[in-house]
Image (cartoon, rainbow, N blue to C red; front, side):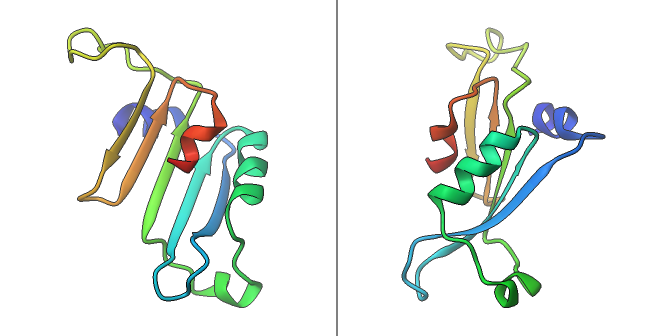
Amino acid sequence: KNIVTTELSQKRLFVVDAYCGTNVNSRLKVRFVMEVAWQAHFVKNMFIRPSEEELINFEPDFVLLNGSKTNNPDWKKQGLNSENFVAFNLTENLLVIGGTWYGGEMKK
């Protein structure tokens, strides 16, 4: 998480609030934060956009931080297979992405 939040700090970011799922009773409210414009465009096309009224009080159930321009320099010490990562923290309802420019990672 710290690697990605450091990468995203002090930069112009794109934030997209969207719904994951069509059923009003079970859909998740997700906030996507990224530094690359085409990724924001991808998310707007992949997920359901809330109405202007829904955006006023939008509180995300889940947050995705995409730091695609960074990587994990300690990946070997941590026993990982690569410097790129996609990590879920279900306790914090958080997904962090680093080092990969593949847009499909955001729909995991």
